[in-house]
Length: 211
Image (cartoon, rainbow, N blue to C red; front, side, top):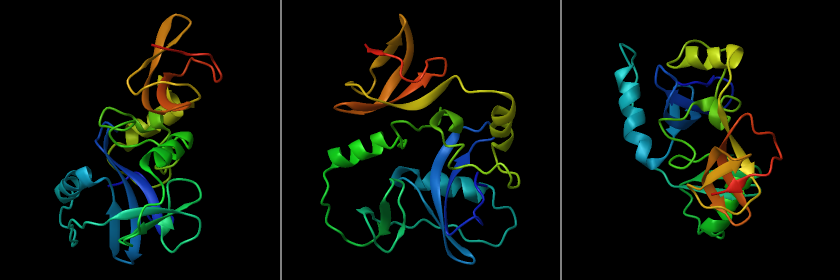
């Protein structure tokens, strides 16, 4: 059902996709025991993930239930799961008090080029546009919904836009202009750095205007 090979490690990043390879939800699959998997996703996506999995359960003997957990990112060493941000560990239900404000955490996320649901990711995005085909997709595992369009794009085509980290001052929703043409839109921003979807014909390092 998911886009990555869950046997590849204890924790695997993956996607739940429609047959046309549109995003239903990004998930982190944690194998807690040989037959016990926890799929971590955004709180607002839990019901959608459970519904999709129940729809496809067929005759398999498995239980699919919602669980609620709190998650904290620890910078440095700790017992937990590998964090999405480089150099971090994700710790569940630890009751830790935050020592980093949300603006600093957002800056770290943007600088690392990590897409967030509701900002860079929604049901209109193709995984390759956000670079998720490099981190959340296996091209050697068996069939899953959305596999054929992803493989076809990988081997025969290309996306028209890609997520980029840009050094500029902007606001989410701002339009980006290059050589007089609109070529992208900002999705997340803090002073000095932003994430944006930019058309692939725009070269790296091009000077973009914010409008």
